[in-house]
Image: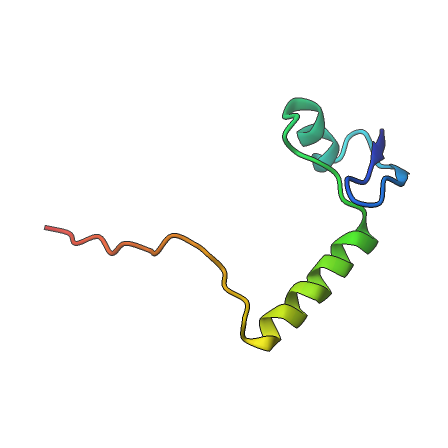
Length: 67
């Protein structure tokens, strides 16, 4: 299966039977990002986390009381 990276727009070939290809065929919201772009994003995110100014907005986990 031919796929295009959403960031660098390079075209790559991936196995048509792999899980990622199946997700992209069945659910159009799933996109492909090449390994170099994934690594670049991971490194820059970790650099921003190290500065201390990085805030990750997640919903707080609510504790459930069993009664």
